[in-house]
Every structure is written in C-alpha cells, then in structure tokens.
Amino acid sequence: MTARKSEVSQSTLYEHTTRLNRFVEWCEKEGLTNLNELTTRKCRSYLDYRQEEVAPTTLENEMRTFRLAVQEWEALDGVPEGLSKKVKVPSAKKGYRSREVKVSKDHAQGILAYLNKYEYASLRHVMFALFWHTGCRTGGLRSLDLQDYYPDRYRKPLLAFNHRPETGTPLKKEQWGEREVPISDEMGTLIDDYIEGHRHDVAGENGREPLLTTTNGRPQKTTIQRNIYTVTRPCYIGFQCPEKKDPEECEWTKYNQASKCPDTVSPHGVRRGFVTKMRDMGADFDTIGDRVDASPRTLREHYDTPTPQEKRDRQLEWVDKV
Image (cartoon, rainbow, N blue to C red; front, side, top):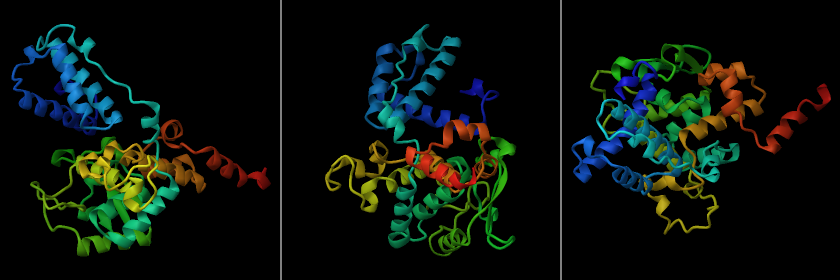
C-alpha cells in the first residue's frame, strides 16, 4: 500500500499493512512466491482461509483492503489484468454489523463490576476502563506513555494523547488529534494500582516507556482487540449466553476465537457506547468531540446510536422545560 501513503493517515496505513500481513502469511503457507501466479481461484482460497479465522465484519474489511492492493498490483503489471474485479468482498450480515454498534451501559457496568472484583487493576481491566471512560480509539490507547499520565498536575488526573509517528504510535488525525483528557479520581486510582502492581517495567526499542505493557512491551492492536472481544463476551462475566450455548463447550470462549461470538463487542463498539452514554448524560457534541477526537457531524452520523428507550428518556428530561 506504499502508493497510498500520501492519501491516508499513518494509522490507516498501519491497519492496511496489518491486514495485508495476513495475506503474506497465507502466501508463505501456500508456497506462493510470485504474484503473477495469483489467480481468481487462489484469491477465493485466501477468502475461504480467512473466513475460518475471523468474524464476518473483520473479513469484509480485510478483503476490501486486499482488493485495493490487487488493484495497485494490477497497475504495476504484478498480477493478471482484471483480477481485482474478481476479488470477492463478502458483506457481513446486518445482524453481525449491529453487534458492533456499541456496548450498552448495563453491559459495560457489568464488565467493570466483574473486572473490579476478579481482575482488579489487570491490563485487561485498565484497557476496558480507559475505553469506557475516555472514548479513545485503539491507536490512541496504544500510544499512551507513562509520561502522558498526570495524576496530580491538575484538579483531576489527566491523560495526554500525543502523535508520535516517528516511534510507531501515530494518532488517526495526526497532530490535530492531540488532546488532554481529564479522568475521574477513581480511574486515576485504577491506573496508579495497575502501575504499582501489574505493569511490566519494560521500555520500547525507541526508549519510550509505554503506560500499558505486556511482557514484550507495548501491546499490539490485535492484543488490545482480542482482550476487548474477550471481556465483552456475555458469558465471560457470568451473563446468560444469548445464543444458548454451553460456555464449557463453546469454541468462541477461546482467546483467539472471541471475535466470532455474535454478542461480543469491538473496541470501536465500546467507543460508540461511550458517546451514547455521554449524550444520555446531557453532554453536547462539541464537548464529546473534544474528548474522543471526532467532529460533531461524525458523532451524529456514526457514533450516537441511542435505542428507542434512550431516545424517549432523553426527551423526558426536557418535558417540563419546553
């Protein structure tokens, strides 16, 4: 996707690269060393292979990126002419799309209650809590360093999101996405306890000290995504399975398979749930936008997704005022 460097943000380019890495891995597995040998049949084989590995929405995104790559390779005479038009991009069913709209307030509170009791101040606990209390993107969460956390500089603890592309953590909107986000004292205490008891004292290759760490350093986006998919599975926190499956036998309970559960939620879904929560609390789009780095128009069109009951409750607050 080198040709698109000037057209997209670094974080988007990173996502494209990550998706295409799956194709490279498949090529190595299949012994495909020359793109000129890529055929319609082999493209379909790749689709079938990924279909067994990921959720429908992820598959759709991966195949869209793959088709874009094939178009570029076509322009360079790297693959047979017309191949990109034969790359199938499956559309995820509406039911699978809707599951990623947002995490509900009740579900989020259930997750936090469970983590607070059984996995307090763990990496997984802090990850979910930060998503739910800041509405940040995965790239933003991953970008945080120890020095970006200010526990007592202001009246409330604060997190600073900084664009550092030269050391591997760009923000989606680059320098325009830089911002300071106040958090509650309770959230600050959770971060303090994580740093004190669970954070691995490791530094990255560039000398930076990540706020969130694994034994190998700063967590990859896939690690963050898998952890959020895991904790948002209803059965993980003791909620009844909407699919009526036995958790002891369900294949979706495996760490690498959690995204396939129809009732789990992605980090983006937690972000959407946060926006809806703030709207329910009466926050205006400008205030929310400053916190989550999104324009009021984008929030209206893509993030604020209230249920009919939530819409009604919002109106009830104003009944006696109009």
